[in-house]
Image (cartoon, rainbow, N blue to C red):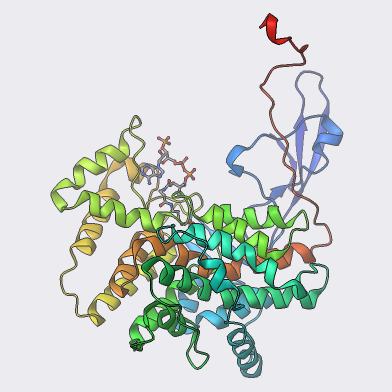
Length: 434
Ligand code: CMC
């Protein structure tokens, strides 16, 4: 496509010589976009971009990724600065409202979220409908969707106050639901949230305390958990966030939209990768087997991929993985784990893959999920809960993006088109003639 001038792209139909000038729009940073909204009306053609590798689906002011430089910004703030200096609830405020809160705003926000952590009592009955061996992500999809059946007073998506109440409810209640899903799976009583604890500490308390024994959480483990939550809080227009936006574009309520996001996150190419990394490391078992698995990952006839490697946008180190790697060492030190075979295995796998031509050529680096599973394991969180934790952290990103979409005056229902390759029109054939 030749460029006519910096602000338009000229599209030419070589079969009839017609041409069209398509407007080019510039963001504050990042690649320019060609505005193709009038393309079908003007040219009778659609664009074709399965996997949306070249398609921007919305305007956003929330999160920015520079995949070549390995940069991730929330509202302009670099992820490593937030991971070091901020905490999860402050980051939630930033994502929702666009600015860091002052002292008064922060105190009020923390208190408002904390006051929404409990679930309606009827949820206890609801949980008991699930099999005990259900995957907790299946429970999450069902129970988060069911919030809409309990909190009717905040379902008017056209009312900004309703939208904010639903947003606070989701940020506050999803951790309670996650912890209850875990308790249910191991047959322990649900542990109520404690409003005198911080967000991460309260989550660990709900996961690991029992009515017989309290759970004293170390400061380092709380900090590590809080940092993991910050690192996963938002990530631009990934599969689950786009799912939330698409579901919400029809006017669906926010609880239903977040349940849709959780369903999308569950897949192993997305949030399910952190669980898949641990399963893979256990399968590789020891350092001597690494070359065999690296070869499997390179073999195009083998569906196996190195889990925790590669990213659609990052073609340089995932900045979240760097922080995660450091946190991983801190957590293992704090717990006095001198020798963690899985960490040794992970580090050796990373070293071998990063020197391998296949991975170098394709710019496949470790992503956020590569180290998070080892930290979760060290804290005592079972593998089936890894993706649930991702969902807990990402709820604020999803709901911030959903709010931004609802407030966008140009927002319309999302409705992609297709390249149809099926049969053309034909007459029905009666059964006896087939
Ligand atoms: N192992 C081996 N080969 C890989 C891998 C991998 N993990 N990832 C990509 N490739 C190869 C792929 O086979 C292809 O090779 P070729 O060009 O020869 O056909 C090339 O690299 C490009 O891959 P792609 O599938 O076209 O890239 P994508 O942008 O569609 O996929 C991805 C991105 C993350 C789904 C993919 O890298 C992957 O499956 N990684 C493993 C799963 C994973 O760790 N997911 C977590 C992503 S980060 C957390 C999140 O945001 O959810």
